[in-house]
Length: 354
Ligand SMILES: Cc1cc2nc3c(=O)[nH]c(=O)nc-3n(C[C@H](O)[C@H](O)[C@H](O)COP(=O)(O)OP(=O)(O)OC[C@H]3O[C@@H](n4cnc5c(N)ncnc54)[C@H](O)[C@@H]3O)c2cc1C
Image (cartoon, rainbow, N blue to C red; front, side, top):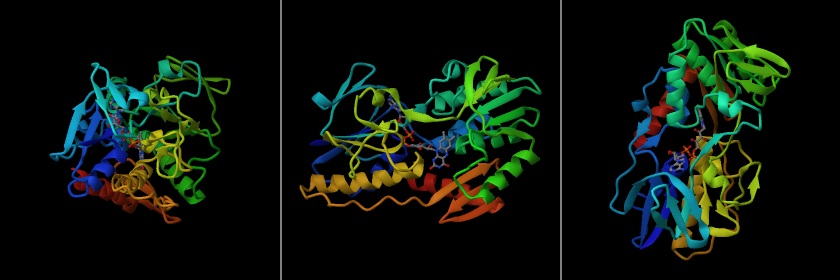
């Protein structure tokens, strides 16, 4: 039996499983999925876990079941390409014929002194749980600093506002306006929501140092009680340690999502270099590309000369449980309808994968 090993049951590899199971797997191929968690985790909702508005149980989706799918729970510590093997923390080795690396990302602190030691994270479930515990323990009127006003920073700040009306929330944005690469109407809408709900957005910020209870914006010291870092990501360490060529910090891949020097290794999601910013949507589209390629490889057919370009639909963001924003096909939708669209998408995703 040929063994396709999927590292990480995230958005990219879940899409691969969805497409290959139940009927598209050739008879001589089996799949081994390796993840530390006994379920797929809805990472796009981790901000609500940290803010304490949605329980962790709502963020778990069972992995699929199939007679030719083996699920191994464990921590991947090494990817040994020379021997075509994956090494787990308990010493177990799993051999592969084809490998898809979809282990996601962790925070990138951009060498800011003290950032790693003194800030909390929402990049995985355990860390989000830790952030929740720390936020819940804050006394009335405490100040939370959130570094980074991308989608996850915005969603965390707004959800936290709904969760804890007493907190002072400071959101540090590197740009001159929030969501600066998107239409101004969207930025104004989000900024207005923050103004109305008393979230302090600090534009043009540059966090140069992080202390246990203070942030340094340029030279200015800003006292806070707790800090959450949402200002950049990089592939997890075990993937960085593979020593492969990287582009903008992510693993370089060819148009088939293969590592150019070793075409039996595919990379998906936040680990893979792309012209697009990392997102669950991108991971799923890359998963589709990998399935197209694998089917040809298994059938001994030549690969298409040119793979179809990946096209992303847009994005959706939540401002608490009632308001939101959507940017789809160059159209902006804001308010309650946008929030309902986002909830509907999540419902569909759970339904399709659960
Ligand atoms: C708060 C927040 C909100 C977001 N909102 C959106 C959004 O609205 N839309 C959007 O498109 N994207 C959003 N994203 C980004 C999106 O979540 C990621 O781009 C996406 O999860 C990447 O998918 P992936 O397949 O690369 O891996 P992931 O989904 O990150 O999964 C990686 C898997 O690998 C496992 N793993 C990692 N390391 C190991 C190891 N060493 N051993 C074993 N298992 C391991 C993990 O347990 C996990 O199951 C958001 C992210 C955050 C943090």
